[in-house]
Length: 435
Image (cartoon, rainbow, N blue to C red):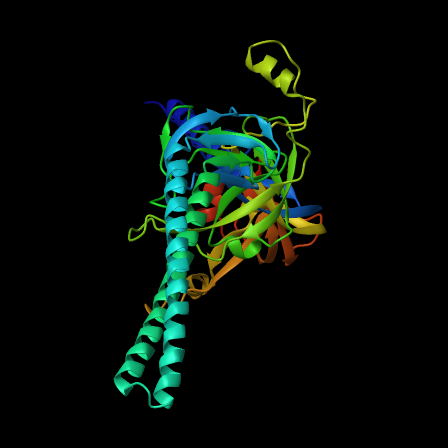
């Protein structure tokens, strides 16, 4: 190979090597190909917001006042004057149970009472006669006309007749009590409405036999409820129950009315918990909470509701909701509100173990017995790098969390991705945004 050819190949090789070096430098600098240096993150600007802390749970709609009607006596229903959904007033006749046996029992006890009263009168007459004999024998004995034995006999007979009269009086009282009880049982064959309300549930038909509650639990005949006073009963987890207080306002969402806003107020918080999955690793303690519906409801005309149920076109969106017992509902209890406070997206706040970070910085392995030092932090975007800042947080809703100390308004905070924030991102690490 000639010298000129060698020179040509040398120039070509040098040029090619220079191009390779330039390409590597340009790629590392981000001039050509690949992505710019730094971890890709999402950011948001710190702003002031009004945050309302919520405790959410689900439950069912039920009347605030509902009375279960069960008979006190057993028998056959011979009259049923109401149907489910009927409106009744206090004192209205609801059910009548066949009274024949109870009337016969009253007649029997009345005859027994008269017999006892006759025996009482007979005992009184015998007492009067024995008293006269006793007084006469006493006078003769004191005059030493009759022996002592005759006097003692008259006295014992007089005392016996006194006891017989008391027994007869007690027998009359017992017969009167039995008669009163029978009359009360006869009265209980007629069941009247104990309050004004709506028949929310009817379990029997005319001709059925029912069992009285005097023998056992008794047959549940029907229920009367005040439908204009509805509530939602939910169960709140033990971790959230301490945040809920009587009088807290609530937002209620009923599945049957997804587009209507319903307001409520907490009226009752149970002191005893209800445990689910007892004895297992999934054991949960919950506390029943009652939320009264304060939005006007159950006041619209029922004929329109019936036409809608029949498939006719009826606009119910502008009407007050008509709530029925058993409807599913979810409740957001507004426990606390912070107005115009510094807030960041809730996913921006993460935790870091400062004890581990200190060990990593000193490049010495941490002792096995070192306790964890878990703190809440956020990462701010500063000159293209992540600045880890410890923060003190306050209340939060489902989107934002209050920052009490550590971050100022208008700062740029890293909000994602979750994988980068929770595991990978470190203090002073170079980052970049998608903008």
